[in-house]
Length: 212
Image: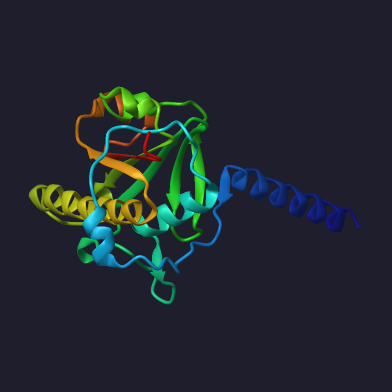
């Protein structure tokens, strides 16, 4: 009887721990993939913008944005909307908002909060980064790139980030959102704020919001 009671208590403790571990995970709405705007129209309207409204992005728009960037478009294989060299998927998307910083979990199509501080101004050296609702930070985890040479890691992580950021550009063009990809970043300061590992490298950042 005592053993059974102890087992029950242990199971309840483990279940409670699992809930606590998942408390930082916020599921996103399923992405909407029925936009009627053609690729040619999106390409025609694709541009960089540096003037942003402070208006927040609705959850559905953020869901669509992140899925377009690097979400899973082939559930049977887990393959993504953007290519990555040798399918290493070394790029993580950090999402900086007024509520804190999140990592996009493509498998669960969810956001995992890692910071509760607003660090949007640290994502770039232009003042608009602190006004726009979302700043995406593209971080390469070089440990996922196996035995690739240092030169290959630099080249492919940059190329893979380019594919993702262009997906964001095209989605923003289709939805009349403003965006600009940026390289002017204090990478050391931002990496410290994000508590990145030595194997993680900030490649670029990209601001997204409604045009002012």
